[in-house]
Image 1 (spheres, rainbow, N blue to C red):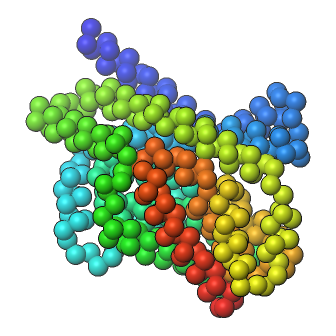
Image 2 (cartoon, rainbow, N blue to C red):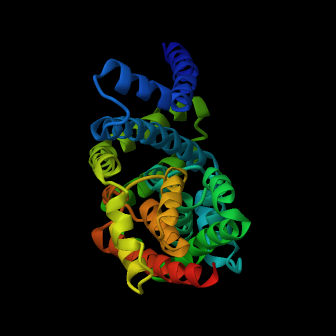
Image 3 (spheres, rainbow, N blue to C red):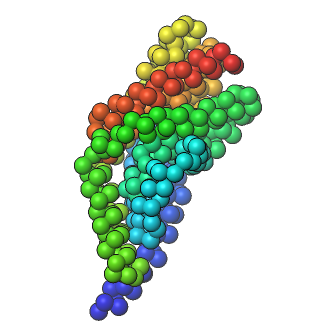
Length: 347
């Protein structure tokens, strides 16, 4: 009987895992077909764009969250994550840990909400909070698609400043937030999954439990994390979809086109309710610049859109207390504003 259960589990994984990967790969065309063919909606309408955005991002984040949580469960079961945590917190690495986390964020093509599943996985594994923040800051700000688009639209100088400052922002922000010792502001839920992961790993290690016997608990834990954050994902993406579909570009260019001292702080404040990934916002930035918005102001707006969104704050509420969210958002806001002024001075 036990052997049959193991075979069923293996068969299920063989079927489900490729299916999830395939669904993630072809998700956008499937959502387009559902929204614009099966539903009576048009892509050029605000409602159609908002509905399409909502279904796409909700499903995408659920898939990522389940896969990454399960993967981190495997990592926690087989690798000495506690030793890695101790090593990162006691050994002098001269800031390289922040660089590696920030660079990893730059090469992962995630928006702010999509980055959170991996952020949860890092926290679950006991990685120092400052290092995980370095990843969370950079991941939405910089990715290879946005860099390629930026290069074609604004040239190599602006692209180098954009990508380099995004990575630097992650490193400095992660370092500063790490020095604040903010782990006490993580939510009770996150502290509980950290504790459970360590207890489970110690038990398996002590009993020499085979991987196939560990797998059901790992998958159950991964699905449990998905269920716990589902409501936060739906609320956050719904806010982002509404903003994405209904806020017109002219609303922003009207107030940002003048080269005034308060344009950059205003750009950052106006960007927070928005939600998009870096690749999706670059064409909008091109429109801004064409309409007279200084490039530094436009880049500050873009960084705030992708790195300080309300949907991201909603999702983070499951992971951390409001005080920590406020510290995180406040720190990044100050840096983005300063970078905006620096961009306008250099470019």
